[in-house]
Length: 248
Image 1 (spheres, rainbow, N blue to C red):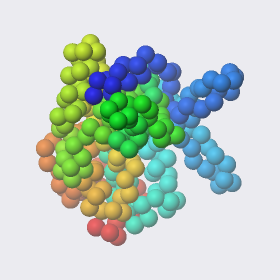
Image 2 (image 1 turned 90 degrees about the horizontal axis):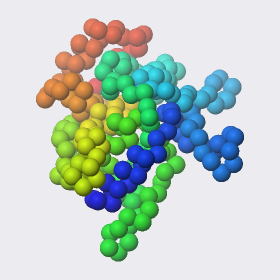
Image 3 (image 1 turned 180 degrees about the horizontal axis):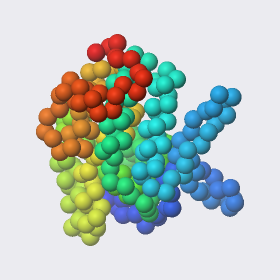
């Protein structure tokens, strides 16, 4: 756990100037720079870059709007376009507090399988960094997935810090003297947004659990009812020209 805390404090010493993915520098051989955060493709098949971004609001709005555009073309959520449209409109209304930098490197798949350890369980390396992103401090220093209480997180929609997360936060505060990092560890709102944008809405039961977790984290409410939320969202945002779901 102390080694994880040490990794966090070292990453904090290397701030970057924008949100995006690391790529080889276009001007300095052997160096890296922050490039686009994601890509789409135009009608001729050419890659269209999005980013880098100067703040989290612009990043999330571009990402979610791109997803809405994919709903319109039928590339995502073909059986549940209206559900997904309403979900994305709700996300846009309740984005995490906007951050304007500095930004930090984050591993997006920080499960235990991506940490290399020796026989004494010392961390010797971290793998699968191909999709690492430079992101807001509030997202970069959430606790790694390997510390989450996955049962509560996925099946109950709870964001309660696990005992391991509390230990990491305590070490950062008491031993590393980093109150700011300690306070960020147990926050999960950025993680919840990412979950919703990446989960297949056609897996209705699982998607509802994931969305309810985001809703509880974003609103502070203790309970979530899909049908009530759906009616309210439809009244607020309209149908966007999409047909109702065929799977619920």
